Amino acid sequence: MLDLAQVPVAQSLLAKHDRELDLAQKAKKNLVGLIKARCEECGRTSEFEARDAGTLQVCPHCNAYVDVPELTGEPPTPAGTRAPLDQE
Ligand SMILES: [Zn+2]
Image (cartoon, rainbow, N blue to C red; front, side, top):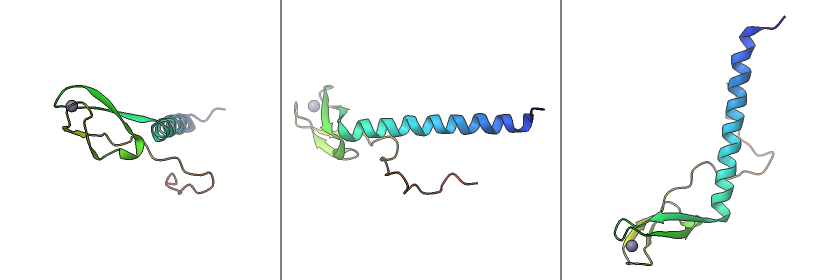
């Protein structure tokens, strides 16, 4: 007999897993690529290196300061060193 009490738990675990995968992929993409930041002064979009995330950079078009957005998601961690945050 199917134990209905287990179903929401399983669904929640699956959703969580999907979200973690999604975040990891986004973080990985950001770290190896460029971050687009829009200059509020001239309205043009420029690309900055991922390591400049969360910093102020100078717009190459008008020399105004541009706020480079923070990376979303956590940086990828090597397998086996994962902190046990998921235990409840
Ligand atoms: Zn600008």
